[in-house]
Length: 538
Image 1 (cartoon, rainbow, N blue to C red):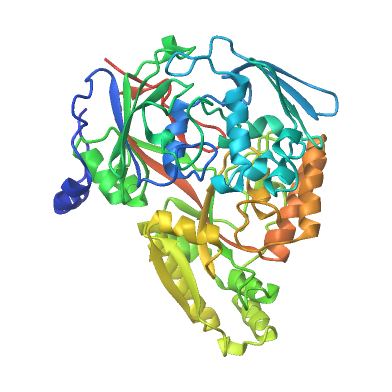
Image 2: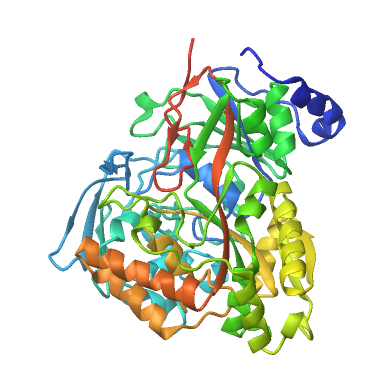
């Protein structure tokens, strides 16, 4: 393709040449030169087992390699994938899915109901470390099984034959079809997927795929290669022969690699790239259905005091923060993503209610004094853990400076590698910890559920029976307007009254895409790019 670059960015690329050559490998030896694209993604994180502790690597892999039962297209219509149809009873407690009989794993063996049950049962073992296990809890006895209070044979999932999968829910769940795109509802081949420790998920011989592409090679901390799955039921619609995902430690290296022609797609880049490529065909900017925010550990004093949590929230200047961090950010005061749309109204969901709170430095100082820390006196030094990414480093420094200036409190900054930051958060071993959540499905529940007392993503000790009850009621409310009221009330309680989190900003996704690539789609639920039906123009 014809390269388009400003002198400034070209200069940066040349200056970073040595670093680039150290973190980018050549194309894998023997790679077929057919229709292939190379995608730059963030560094290697997590397992590729849908029942395990997944992170960015799995998300990149699964978009092209795994078929969920069904999903929703850009118009909100059902797109059947592993399932060909389903029925639900009147009170939305029994959901029966009929699987495609022409669906095959990448070794040619049939995809059966047992493969879906395999992921579910393994995810309900806490030893698997699944952060998504709580999304199985609508199923009868799933939560009790996870907590060791019931046996697996009581689980409300039936497999009456190889191509029928029946879910019995404990309560009506109107958003249940949205949950089906989550990892814990996708299949893993029962013949090989035995545990998260065995390594089956990164071995091409055992890591079978039921989607358009399958794993051909995995080189830790360097790259993995997906090749077209010739057994895929819709293989005729798949145009690419291979997709190579390369790991990078930072967004600047991704941009440099794109400029050098070593990758064809680079995602989630810095705002500087957006400015450098303004008006060029390579630039592909989308709304991220995501929120950057901070968890406060309620088990750590004085963060167990709601007045302190409110003071910290009110003392931050998010407009200034976004000016410094980059033009691809926008202040937010919500947990639910700013760009998530309400399916009923078509409008952004967060615009359907009052903003949870407003910044006010004077009130923040009053609250801190009421909590026993006038002008910050006696306030303990708290540590903020965050990943070693440029955006997060800039964010941390601004927060540190603003809280010192506005509240006279000291925040110690501790940068960590991305995987270490995940581990710190999951273990609850933090005071303040950076969190970023990209929607897994197109419903506010994907955000609000993380603050539930029984959520596997509740890492900060939140245990709020009133909040739990409101969110639980929303799950069975069939009237869309009433359900929206309940969800807004839950968010107001958690974010605007009890201040369990510190929302920071929403983001645009800044991507560079070779203009010769066509057919890239944006996943409506998350805003992420999907390459399963991409092509290369002749």
